[in-house]
Length: 184
Image (cartoon, one colour):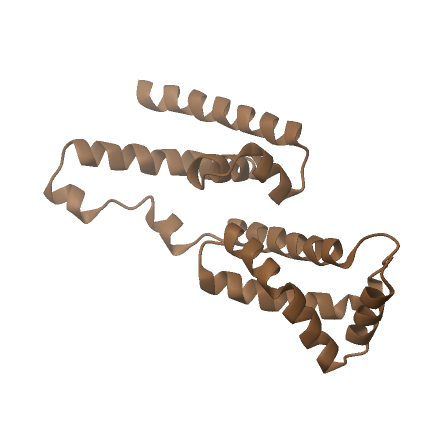
C-alpha cells in the first residue's frame, strides 16, 4: 500500500489543482496509448483522455490503496470509460454505416465485377448489423479491426470463452444468411 498514492488521490479528491496536474503528468502517456489503440482517430483518443481524467478526478475519493495499486486503478477507470465509449458509438449509426447500403455512383458507370463485390460487401455489412450486439461487436473487432479474440475479451471485459462462442454463433448466422441470400 502506497501512502504517497493515497495522499495524491486524497488531494485530487479535494480539487487541488497541483495534485490533478501531478496525476495527469504521471499517467497521461499510458492512458493516451491505450485510448489510441482502441479508438479510430487521434482526436477521439485525446478527447477520451480528457474525459478519463475528469472521471478520475470525480471518483478520486473512491481510490483504496489496499485493493489496488494506483496505476491499476487508473487503468481500470480508463478501460471502463473506453468500453463505454465504444459501446455508445457502436449503437449510434455513423454516416459511413448509413452510406454502406447506398450504391456507389462509380458502379453505375462501370457495372460488372466491382458492382457485384460492392453489393456483396454492403449485404455483408447489413447482415453483420442485424446480429445481436455481442456477436456483432466481436466480429467487427476481430475481423474488421484486426484484434485477437483475447484482446476483444479484454476490451469487452468478457470471458474469452464467451467471446469465442459469440464469434462462432455470429459466423454461423452469417453463413446461413449468405447461403439463403445467394440461393435467391
